[in-house]
Image 1: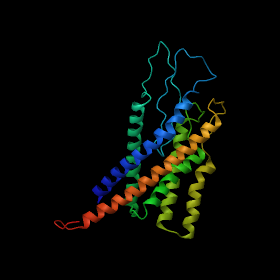
Image 2: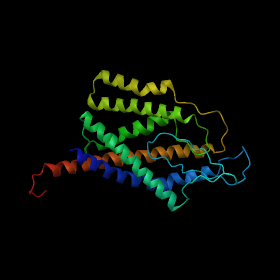
Image 3: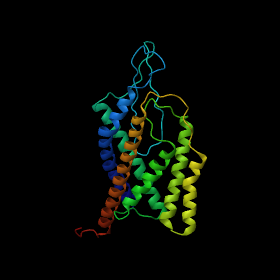
Image 4: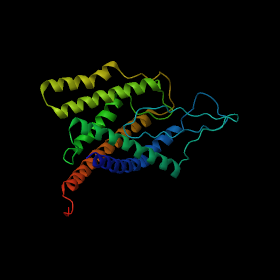
Length: 254
């Protein structure tokens, strides 16, 4: 059972990761490259052009810093993937690895909670994953482009993890029972992180246009939704296929 679950998780992750990487390449990466042209504006002069690290967000992943890397003649440039094929390849690899991590997480939750992932409920698992790891955290920490002001990285990560845990617990509780008290507890779990509040970004001007930041946040969340729906649905389908095969006695054609 565990071997089948592991295989289904990895195959579903590969499928979801490749689909998401394709969407990122055509919709997300162009916005990031556009935003990188605004990095460093209005603050200092450039002895050399800044080289920005890859700013791709794997779907549902925690926030991280987008600081530009200023280079000078005295300091070697920090390595970053070159634009084009190299950047796309590294982004695809990171997305597939992140998908594998998320698939193994929901697989473990499924096994220990006794709520199997099937093709019939895979869509709901995908919705729950999207709400838990993307939508709820984004309500307080919207996806940010390079060059945008952001709160302390450690504080953002703590709040993101807490929000994901609370929201995930709420989803799991409602999956196990629909009692009235369960709805009340689930609402409280979802609300508490937002009542506490996400770390606020410093009140600093940004050269990144507001419409670009809004478009990036919307497309990032849309891409994440596709990621989770593909992951949950394919995971459930593969679980059904592997379960059917394992139930067939040896020597009997499936």
